[in-house]
Length: 284
Image 1 (cartoon, rainbow, N blue to C red):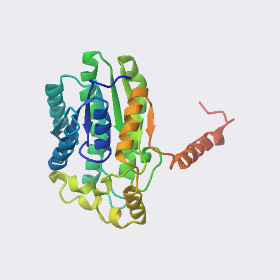
Image 2: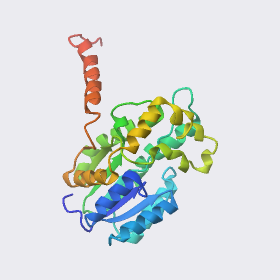
Image 3: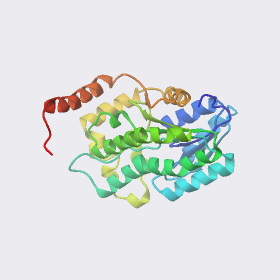
Image 4: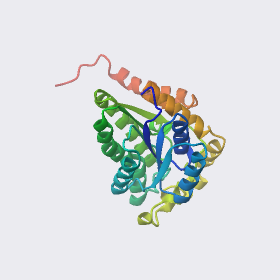
């Protein structure tokens, strides 16, 4: 999708962080953007800021872990802009907890926001892109943790799922004129470590293991991650990379080289597993 001007994008988690960076970069390219978020005050502020630049943007509130709210947001987008060409499944939370501290609510919330909203986003917006025949592009935000497991298994599971879904759909949707990219950011200046601020009421009481519990606040890893995020990459730079990735139909969008070496080490470990059985004849 080389010429983005005049196209319409739907971006989740758009009120702050990477989502706002992507919405801003797209708007700067002449894209009409429907910004979706769960936080009304933050969304209003983000929209007002972009409108001061004469960007054609609007907003809709939705808890993307609820399919019916995402469907309603899609209907509002079509009502406002007529068509959708770009879907950015960006909303994400840093919850889940470490082994021994899991709860069902923690898993459900993390999977609902990080993975199922991506599934539903594609299910809902894919046909809308196909219907106008003008082509489209889907970008889903995973994480470097979708390539390299860290210390939060539920989070890792969802992010590996987003990578698998994106890679699997890329070849399937290409003949339909829809490109698919997966964004795997490293440490970006976002509020991911404050995810518990948006735990829905239906998961009340689960906050200790969904994002800001003892394991997230006090662990050595969390302390390092918090510092790295505070000094991380500018979200607008990430948005510019995403814009370029859409224009160039990149399969994977990375933000930096910090984790290249450990990811290659992981691939080497996988290859070693094949090397161990090389030359053996399977029994049938």
